[in-house]
Length: 118
Image (cartoon, rainbow, N blue to C red; front, side, top):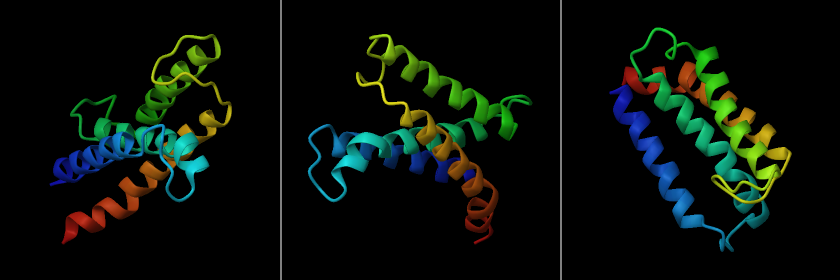
């Protein structure tokens, strides 16, 4: 059941990414266009790695470091003009990656077990 919930979250995050897009004009456009996906993608990536049956990758700290490294690498490459998963460098994105990872860790530790009990 955990895999089903995690996959559903990942699908919703993917759909949100495509639905909001660069031309989003709804509520909070600056936050949605600039930071929401930088929180949600690490959130989903952390949870997806959590269902992998591997003794090292399954550890929360390892997953957090791996996910942050992927985000930080792409953001740093954007700084140097390499457009991977975006074109605009924003130093606050590093913070948003960390926020997404922390939210995922809390979700996995507190919310997910409660969902699985029912």
